[in-house]
Image (tube, rainbow, N blue to C red; front, side, top):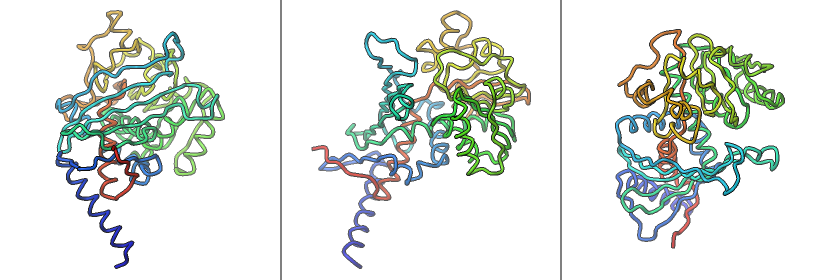
Length: 365
């Protein structure tokens, strides 16, 4: 065996040993290190596929429903004295998740709505820091943009399993940026019975670019660029919102019978739609009822309450609440996004990286 082969074997054995230690919650090292994983490395470890994220989301939602987590309300940092756009902020999202491999961490994610147009940069950027659950030492830093977009898409994938019509064939998406690409790619990967995707963006060229990109990998699916948000939404059995709007624009009347709305961008659906829908579902009530989002506005007006909420998504995943019960039900999912989802996804990628010997190790001292 060559020297290089011996070194590779040693690294693999060391990675397996560290992964086993991390999995058992007894990670120890006399010379503490951070493992840094950039976007390319994360994608190479399976983080570019929705399968990993859907599995991690099921796990996170199950832990949420069973109370095996800690998740403080996330603070929003906005520049002092500047109201700005609703999507201009940096959010700190700390959490601890239990299960067989307890781990803590935080996602620190920034957003600037005009980054694509003004700076040629993605709207959102961030990092995830993972901490050993026993020592509380930081053990990894992961690029968060890919994980964040893919786990957000996985929320729709998992929710559609329980809340959409069985065998749905049409999907509508409003907003055609990075988040929309992740959402639709993930849905198409998981649900082969999708036949039509209806797209709308205020920039027609953005909608056409997304249609062309997705068509290349899904030649059997028809991608249609709509002339208006209304035209797109009315066609969808599953409707996904991927905008940065701060003004609701989707009235209840646009939703077809049996529609499932994955309201990812939160502010898109009119208040009345929440009151008229057959079921309103959130990921976490406390996280959703804040920041003057539409649901929070309804609560402040005395028109909605925890008692009127049908369920948190984890309750449906573990079977304590039913999902879709009738073909004609209109169901709205309003997911604010939970830190435990990010930590669950990052944990899987981190443990895989240790086993594969991937990433860059950075000494703490």
